[in-house]
Image 1: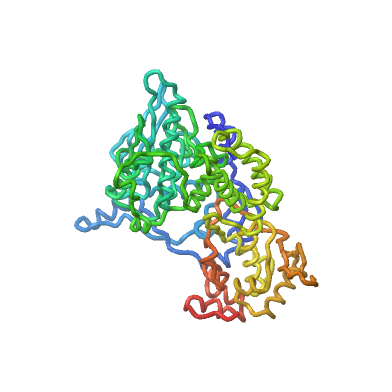
Image 2: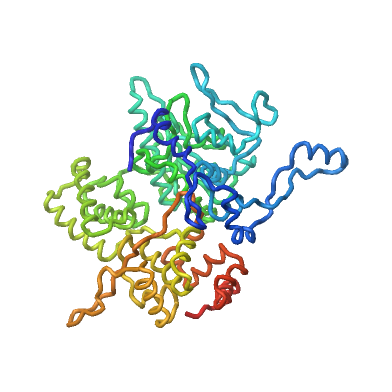
Length: 576
């Protein structure tokens, strides 16, 4: 899962080829191409044409000058509208058609950067230097921050720093943590101090339901970034910075922390730091070890809802400083569970609780296919704890193994979550995959429910009539016909353990199923909905269809039941 920090050579050998690979799979037909040509998209014109919208683009400079000459006294709108191309419509519905385009679009979404003022790090003869580029700057091919400039950043040609689009608002707050070696101190010791500050910041942020993302800054420091789904004021960003950096659980001993973009431009991640000669990728928020697939991680970042800041409450300990001590967070939250698995047994007397949390993280996040796989993961984890944190463990190894067996069985049989909110993403590709397996609307609804169960549990899942009706709202007769079609005719649903003929005094169990095949996933797929156990509704399949198809297309595909799909728009009750 992890590896060492990438040098420039590592980046060019292992990561750069991925950005050059333009191989893409068409979400509409499943065929693979070096790139999605316009000629191929024309074959899907019956689907794409009704989805085309008007796109707002900037007018050419010559056209703006001409309009100013024609209307010297009035303002000239520098924007115009044109109809989308089929490629642009496809990208809006299903996501970018290449990894490099996906990275660019994600950057524009997360940072909302200014296109008119930005910074550029270039490698000079003996050093690297930052340049600020504005419309008045000279000597540059283009003064605006273009998509091509961002592509060059990700390809390692140069390094880009961005500022907010607005002077007093931002969508991202970055804590730039850096530790300068003191007299007689090694660089490794200085970096260790920076790591301690980063881990402390991450723990406190997660206690406030904020999701930080940590990346290497290039030298001996790190960037801890908070991305928001809406703009926040610089005043609010500064208040967050002051609160976290002055929190009693965050020691600022001989470490400098800056708040970006309030003090300077934000250096974008996934680029080269030319002075340190390293690749600035993302790291695990707790262990601070580099992720092997930083691109996938970046594309899956979800901004923090702005409303969380309105509900932000300062901890009592942060209002009044007190003597600091190391203790384990006793809350059963997703953050505490993840910390238990990644940081391990940090204090005496916490072995059992930490192991239980680590087991909950393993079964819900790593999703082992069987109890034996779960136990193997926990045994490996325990061996590392006895090696690294043996001073905090007073239980003998064989006694721990016996306890571990009980914990693993409990977690596996009861699907113990330990505070982790399990969720499933459904993409446009999932919708087309389900429709390719059966044209029957009832069977499609059941297959969506089965795919949800499969992804929630990971592999084999219990799927009885009560659960089917709970997820679909369908009548038993409709469910029987849909099951027969998916299991016997289509072969996509398979019974792993059949308990329907069990007799005797023992209580019969629900049949255990699995899917014989699942839809393929791409990092750049567009997510239509993220579903948890609390947000699933029986009309979910209808809502997904309405996000992809027009009324005319639905009427053509489902001539006898499209009115039930359209009833979702009117918030009508849908019968089973």
